[in-house]
Length: 354
Image (cartoon, rainbow, N blue to C red; front, side):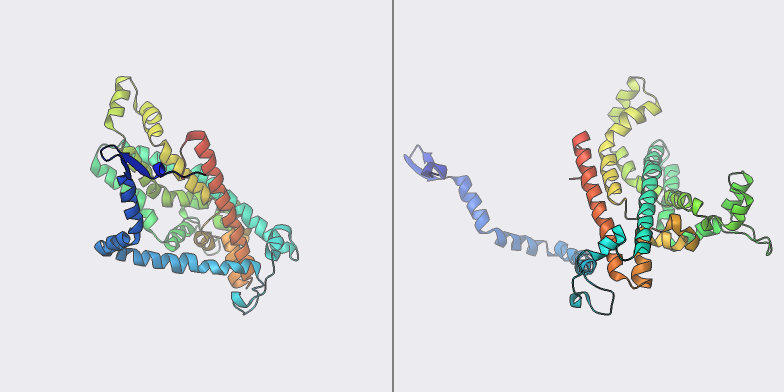
């Protein structure tokens, strides 16, 4: 390729010669002293960068450093040696989990846990995702700031309870009863029994001891716990809508429901899509704490998820490599779901997470 002086210089009509482009001079100076300018910026705003140190330490110690242990998925870790001292076993754990090689019972348990994880997350997405949007729409229609604040506090409050407290409340509400000791079932169990929605035997046996009711209890308690707090993002998007949009809709004769349909929802559509993508990304990441506190041996068939499977076999069963492989599979599928959902959203609506 031929390179000419005109590619780097400009012609000065006054002197009749070629001179260096002033813009190029500035760019060269910036590139030459780039790190010096960075150092000056850091020294000038050192307080802000000092505040980043704890966050960086947290990410290094709890996010990046544990990634080394992922090698346990490919090493023989079922003894007292460290991961560095183990020898590679290839994809033996993955073959066991997916195809039952060497341990068909463990593979069956993993497939059951994987199915339960997907179903719990899918039901949460279908029934739980729209609820925060509806709550945000409800908050937007409350004109009194005091009344809205009271309702917001009441709906946000369950999110600030610990998982142990929340699950304890759920257990008390649906606890089992006993005819011999005179102990009555939980309030919710009694109410459902009186309404004829469940049998008296089911109420006295305890809803959490019946696999058929676990998923419903998990989803309803999850909506009660997090729907109000999750509505904050949607409510913030709604209050950012210009009042002129409502005025134009009113002039056209739109009522409240029509305003929600043709003004509010289209305006917050991008926020809904982004939140939906992030929700799909965590489709297989069901927190094990809540399930661990609610389930028991009677409800494994519908309650056991990948996280509790990994906890039970990795800690209690000393199968660390198998547990790591199970979590690795779940995370890989979750990453693929995020990529797929983001691609579909970008092509269908021009709104995407990245």
